[in-house]
Image 1 (tube, helix red, strand yellow):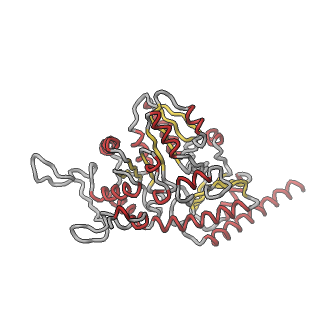
Image 2 (image 1 turned 180 degrees about the horizontal axis):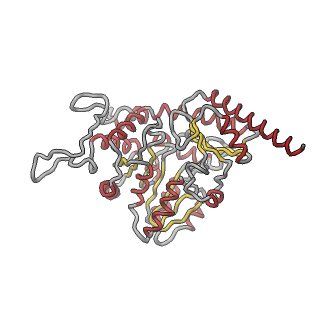
Image 3 (image 1 turned 60 degrees about the vertical axis):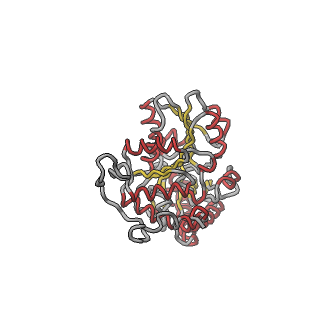
Length: 397
């Protein structure tokens, strides 16, 4: 049985980099060399300079390409380096149609850097295909999808957008950070470029910053490869090795975290203090059916809203288990405050327009026992109730 025929879980462990052909080592060697000796004056070997190609980084690039069902992978120094380099496929005078509740770093890149380079954009609600079609201009060259979106967990129909893009003669970029190829493979749904912050679920241990891109077209692979080498925001070898190690446990981590996320989403959804829960694993989610059709699971990230900023402040002050931090996709649960963390780069008016309120919190569920997390949330919610009672009493007295 060829390794290409294995199921996804087995492919995470058994690929062409499973064994080092020189030593038999069952771990990819870390090759620190920045330059490589050339034995021929007229013909250089495969490796010449570390920025252009490195065997450790190449192993990660091969692995992610296979997992996403693409022909070529690229590893970058961060998720934003991957996204920014992919945007360099565009030229001055081009136009992008982009999902409105996109990650703050992407928003900043598009609005403050690409505009300066003469690349225009239109933000749309990508769950509304009519709005997407209306945003198309004669110079539209790319559609940028993030699904589920950060932090409102809106789900975009990847196949539908890819079809619109093909009719337009444009590329489709999909940020697949939240679901990873374990649950969603955008290239199989017609996308051209898949992007990851590998800092998150792929490496999964809050100990590396990395970005990945995958394409399934030879010409696009050449163009993106040229940009990776020319722009030079490559992933270092230690970090490439850490991501490779993280990927081996991706399936079991994500399965466990997702199970717990559903339990927590249901708990929050039923709690009187929670105004709204955003999680594509709940049947009440507006794009529940699309999510079910295009992905193998809803993932391990959800967001929820409390009555106001004070209630959220009290909740965060008393919750004990999750880390209160930027980022997601780790073995430990992480609570984030989008208004001041992931989406701080977005002006408040823009955030509010998109429904990213000051009482919204994002939860990335880790590997803790979900009952411990529920008990922890319960005691924090009790503190919110008590503080609200004190306020009410103060107002009446």
